[in-house]
Image (cartoon, rainbow, N blue to C red; front, side):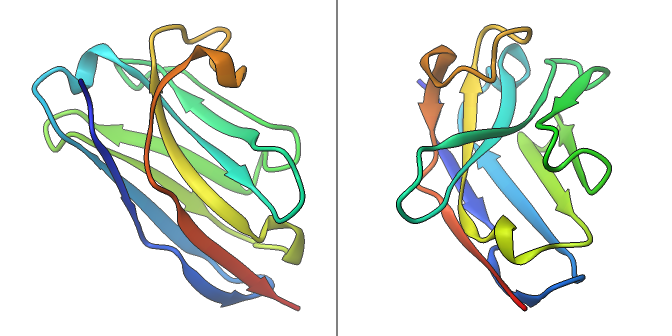
Length: 124
């Protein structure tokens, strides 16, 4: 069982930056693939980024590639999402996620645990 708690969301102007954090409970954090999803009003939850158990491999949705960076600190049981050059279309609730399969993590069905979400609002 893993509990995930996100923080770091807020209101930012277009072009600005935010860093999201996700703190995980339990001693098995390093055994999980971690990632981020987001859900905008009226839209389905979509994949944003994933990171392997060791942190050496990552991949991103095309819409955020080059602007967002995912990282993790297994000693602190925390995963991060650094978001730069934010756009109004990045506005959404961002969810931390944990699962077992790195290569197919972008499919919501492969996520085992979800955080409660943190709101990110980008004003134009």
